[in-house]
Image (cartoon, rainbow, N blue to C red):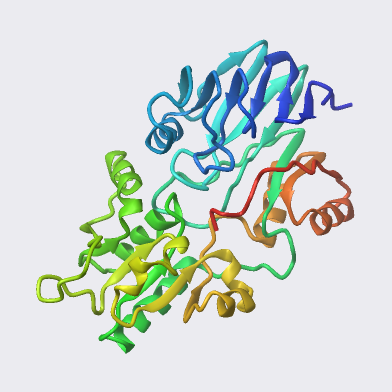
Length: 338
């Protein structure tokens, strides 16, 4: 029998009893183990935070150096113990520094995957498959309709649109942490070496990525005031900005921008239409339906716990495979990173 009595759901999130620690807690706690730097998983105010060095750096960039009283930085696959529980962080492939949390206690191995993906991303280490007894998976795209194309093919569409409309700025809405840097790196891999313009809100995180050796090439922030078109031309340029900036005065200053959105949700065409998106790019930082099922098969767990997302279909699929599956119904985790 697999003993999971030492991992409980609490009002703060998943609680590891013998370690007196929480995984991605939604409220301030004494001891937090953080999977990655997105704001719905990495919050400020904890007394002690355990995470990868990169995740701690991201939290510091977003919240200030004093976001926690103390911190422990772990390298991937480093052995660590918290209150008798073996803890390791292994790559999740989601964003820079993202990690699955491997917990070992009373002859049971539980892996909390956090947010993860299985597709190519030049800006972070790929997902590490490890067998376990219990696998805790997200289900952001946990429906059979979600089958994401290869990102390289979506980037080809972007390059073709740029050639078709040389007089227009190509403005790409992308989340500031992870998605923006991945897009830039994929554009570079497609052979584009000109300056890419970024919204000022992205500069700090792009600089952080580059400090960890992620090559993003020449970047320039767009002007915050009126654009002098004699000094700077944004026609036929790539401009990457947070989705929230698209309807602001910042966007209105651009000349006839061609609006692009990069998200797994762009597979739902109605979302693209509602957002005024002319070119939807289906580029996701989460696993799609097929990749979730493949991962579940590869880790060979006998129990699957689903933390957030589209739970019902995934639980049904797991049970058809002969696996025990249940929804944890944790609240406070959004899909803003898409």
